[in-house]
Length: 261
Ligand SMILES: Nc1ncnc2c1ncn2[C@@H]1O[C@H](COP(=O)(O)OP(=O)(O)O)[C@@H](O)[C@H]1O
Ligand SMILES: [Mg+2]
Image (cartoon, rainbow, N blue to C red; front, side, top):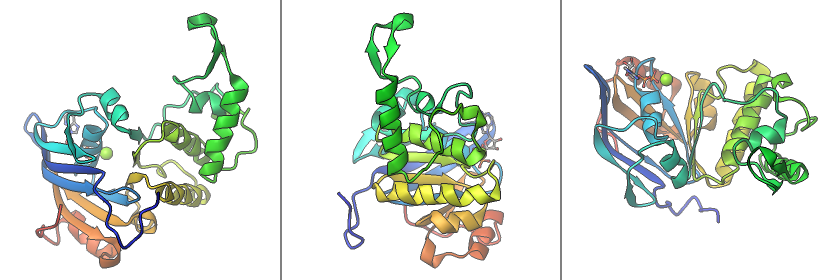
């Protein structure tokens, strides 16, 4: 079901007062953030601001020192990557972790292969079923690849990104985190990935999009959240933001004002 613009939907995830330190370094300091379904949050901040730490807490790579996470209204403990996935959170990291020698369906179904019969090393995979489902996902996302049989190592950066995102949506997650999805792409391909982010949002998935290219963030995000030295210093709906304003928050020219969660 799609939520209409008039009815604010219940939060998907609520991060409340999250803090994390590494030795003497305060990576996150009392961060609050609400993510709603169908919403794209652009998460920005200078190097070392705490972006990766925040998403790693959501993906179960780090435990917070303090604070609470609610998912669909329930207080949850995200202890490891498994428990993050079980909640319906998928993270696409910059390195993508694809297997270059496998084809497209092989990568989308990596670790979740559909088995025709047998088990362990003797199992026989249902390749045609995986190919059909891979095709479905790609179509749903508006991705067109010339051939699914191509080794993923031969695809372009943008196509690889599409495959990684397709793999992330295989389990029908509720929240997708994209860490710098356009960083390694040729300029021509950036548009495709941004379009893909748009398509995901129409499936009512919550999205966190990290990028240091503010033009891109403004193109896809509904809200822009700025971290600076571990603190959330701005949480702006796009319409009330501008690139200049965001930059001023990033570099500390405007001090933190009290923002909503
Ligand atoms: N595993 C870690 N060990 C020690 N310090 C870390 C670790 N991860 C992040 N930090 C520190 O925490 C701060 C925030 O880092 P990070 O979340 O990676 O920022 P960003 O992704 O915004 O560049 C930085 O000062 C960084 O050096
Ligand atoms: Mg980072």
